[in-house]
Image 1 (cartoon, one colour):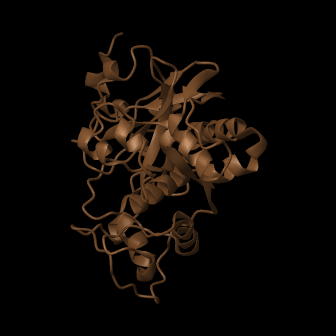
Image 2 (cartoon, one colour):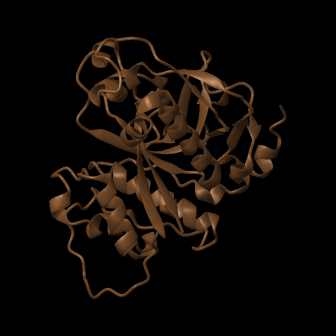
Length: 309
């Protein structure tokens, strides 16, 4: 493959996306067992579950991601023509992953429809300031993603140039309710929960799981970036995103984590065994994973966010 164009047009490489033309594949979802058992959809006995998931697979490469470590057969896709949809990786100090993901997704949606300047960014700090403090934990973590979406839709956010992110991030800031500056708002915000899909299709939970991920992949294809919530295990932080993350055997046999972690899904693919995973932009800095991008198996994701403008 000839990459001589990189020296002439390095800016084109920033969001470089790859498309896979793969038909139906099997996805091993052992962790799905615990979710389904938790709402009494399968007997309380462990068994392997195989789910068939359709996929239009898109994979996004951030700057300097080692392509050979992800796939050796890729083609550039439409996102290569829209580098403005992908922002630089942020390193959070407080637990504001939800704010980073929601704001970046809104920015992607707005820019994709030419509803905000391509050279501007939206203010993460302004969004945090707009959330009632009783709805945030002391470390900045959000109590409810649906509430977060409600406040984003109600209040919107300023441009980053009007309210820059504090360092460390300001969690309990004071807002001026008389501030009449223009704020960008999503038209709709909807949080899709895997639990709801499994319950809706309780006669065929495998179908519910497949529809959940099929819609998520379609949304990534259409909008480029999607906020996803996945179960946060200690081993994820220990591995620092160097491989496709899956919990240890000990973690698999332990109770489900009580908290989640919100990151931006930028694409999806399959490993050598046909298991679906998502490539996500981290908020743990460029030293995490592949220059700020980690890979997470699909069966760890329990919610995603859909926005429109």
